[in-house]
Length: 187
Image (cartoon, rainbow, N blue to C red; front, side, top):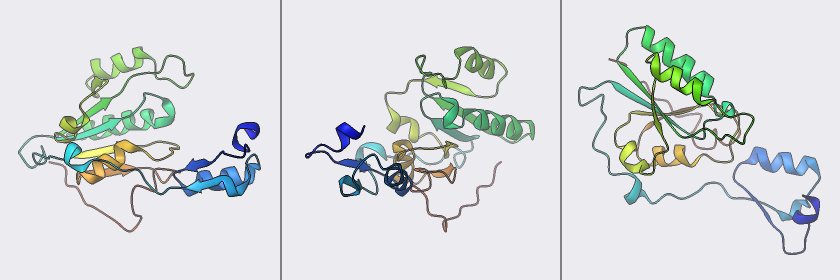
């Protein structure tokens, strides 16, 4: 990394201040080469054409986690929350979008996903190529990740006015304001 990042024409672009601090303290790149860009753009018109909350249309509250299926994305916490809310008798449907990454040691095993589907914990959508259509059908976007750069799925959901639930972790905290709050009543 030192060789690559300290070339005369190199720049390190990061999207959250935690990563900036980490690289500054790691002392592997000259601080003058580190640049913070606070955000990523989304094409609002292509992403957000909402048809209204499924819950407000009389359906169950629909909760989505869209990510690579890695344990570090908070998959276990999502499954635990799904089980807890479903066992309380609330009308909540949990959706999981994404694929396992077989080359990654933190990948969720396909057998685990199949078990969650079989026991009714969640609906697995696999890879979703049309996220705008899926976002029109959910009430809450969840990402209980341990660390992110800047999660594009949460930015897109926020742009659509979808309620966000995420962790106070690097990258995730940059998408939401700590002063913002929302109360969601489950049917």
